[in-house]
Length: 153
Image (cartoon, rainbow, N blue to C red; front, side, top):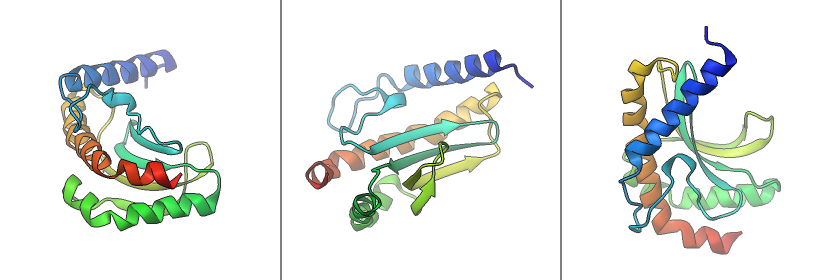
């Protein structure tokens, strides 16, 4: 088992490595983007990537505090589900009401893989292969639909 410091160091090392690997990749609009801390530019809509000692996931997290508004945003995403699925080239999980790591109710659209650990550097190529095409596809999708969500909230 790793100490808290060693765990934090490995986690940080992975995300720095991933960021350096992704740095030359432009966004769908051609601009520079911080892939590891992707900014959607729309309040309460986040693209999240995380990995622990068992699984990795990437998600769109809707965290508006008003459940009705959050559901409206989620339903708008559902309107784009076919476009989304065609862009990411796979089926993701769509959960209208989920609980985040802080116990807050959010809506999630996510994909995950299991059997990988951020603490095993031999898994890092698999993690990068999981995250890279999905965050690029998310960016491409977002480039097409962002104006709808800017007007919505």
